[in-house]
Length: 160
View (cartoon, helix red, strand yellow):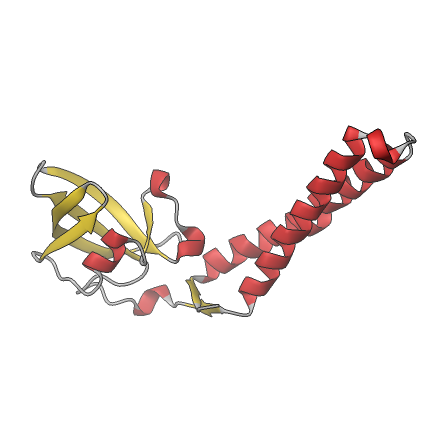
């Protein structure tokens, strides 16, 4: 597994997610499994099968999150250079073909959420703008074809 770059806030969020899985959701799933098991014949008990699958899924999620903690690298937001696009930079981009602007924040894939404008630095756009400076134009190949994005401004994320 590769390094996972997070701020202190990002690592705290993962810890909270893990805590919820371990201390709330897993005990609930274990209780649901016990209730379903008590209903009798397990060979034809769909409720038991569903509860068992839910518990297995939670255990996978817990294992995945626990494994990620070994690879977390904490990024000090105050040391992020805003002269060029880096991980945790907030960037205003203009699509030169459509003349539309968007603000995105480059994050680790663990935190990626395009609906919240949090783009992975490993995505095509993320890779295309890394290292760019204000005024630079990035030609990026995306599934819909090539786009050209101009870097209008670069700031630091304060929420990751």
